[in-house]
Length: 289
Length: 122
Image 1 (cartoon, one colour):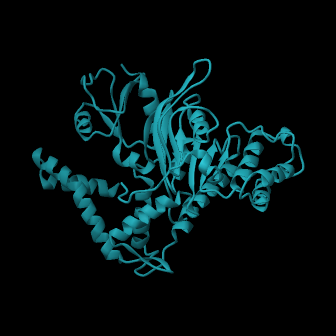
Image 2 (tube, one colour):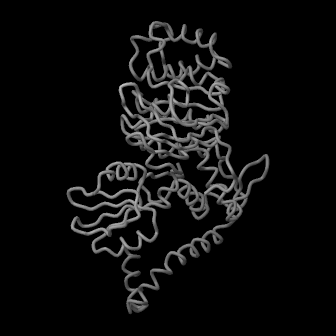
Image 3 (cartoon, chains in turn cyan, orange):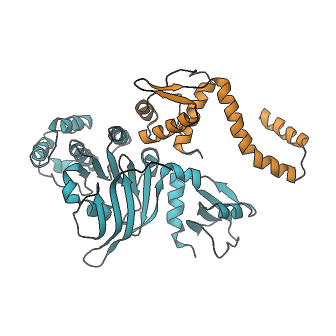
């Protein structure tokens, strides 16, 4: 859709990760994130999202090629802020103490910004973090992350455990990062919030990317067809997913020719998918024979 | 809020924003040379990604519906009648394949008028 060539904040090529013990968590993943965009990495638990992010941050060994702002992660690490999936690092400190530690070890860390965010999230500044709820820990890590001046922000489940009002706060924070020209990569499993905030999405399943593209282009280009169960699909059908449920045969496609063909089928219903339907149909259609 | 984004709508978010601006001209909320909200303001109000608002504004600018004045912001560049005739043209494009199908099926214009009359009253 865009004619200008965007600069890449992140490119991932052929990422592959097998953990000790043989779990093949990521199986040849490619995707990229443009500068200034919000990119959401979606998928069910165990899809490989967190492994992908850990690889980007250089926390684990992997096969493949990852560049952040066209460099190795270690060259540009000061320019990348992140919220980890495992939020148990500052357990024995208070938020106040955690800010001090971050100020000492992180370049370009602004303690006042961290204080401001923690106040906004209503965190008790002097209590031990160990006793915090999931939502409070998420808020704490977000505050510390946002206080670091960076070009790329990576959040693993940034709304995990937050109530709906705090979740809206986080989405507003992400919007403000975009206005300031920052790039955001984040994982989530709350699809409705992603639809409003993400420029692009990549959907992962079983260690692979099933789809990567612009959120707005889904409604423009994709259609879901509901057909009677007994309808015989042609041997060769150009579609992203096809599945049967109890009542209908369901096909997801962006191929104009296929759309023409399916519209002709008796009792077909054509639907413009929102992100939720697109996501569900894509994932559930993996097993059609 | 004068503009609402419906995620269930078959229109992508940026199309809904474009439509929202056009409708605001039709209802008289904005007139020619009215200033419209900045990208940042609108993104905050309707809680969407600023890049999406920017895309909608870029397309509206290309279509001649708004123009940007450096240092001031985006202004409306069209009047109500202009939008109306543009919308009619859009509908014409959407109706063409349907009209062709109707003709092919041997249905007369009078028959179609009857259907439209009925739908109009609903």
